[in-house]
Image (cartoon, rainbow, N blue to C red; front, side, top):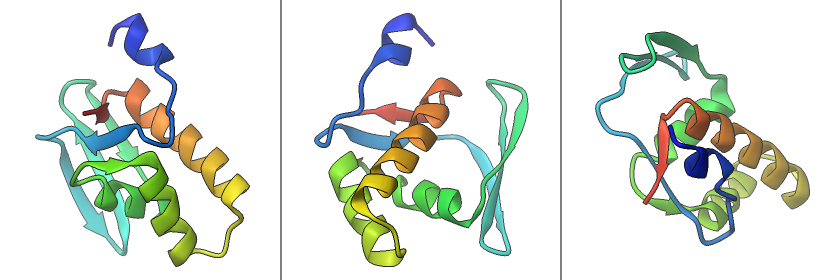
Length: 99
């Protein structure tokens, strides 16, 4: 991934989508994934797995936060902070892209 992609700031209107062709499986509500590109396995907890499900289709960061706040008992500040950190990790691993 280029330097520009790593430094891209996630704004409320940033449209996110998981990259296609990722090999993953859901087991007991949690996603396990193999990135052929990175030759790495990833495991996601239930919230991370839910975010992965939601990003099957393009979604703005603001919409994503709204859905998560409806589904989980969390403040907007905490949800935004945690979700941004998780999305940045997915982008760093080239598993999510900005569309």
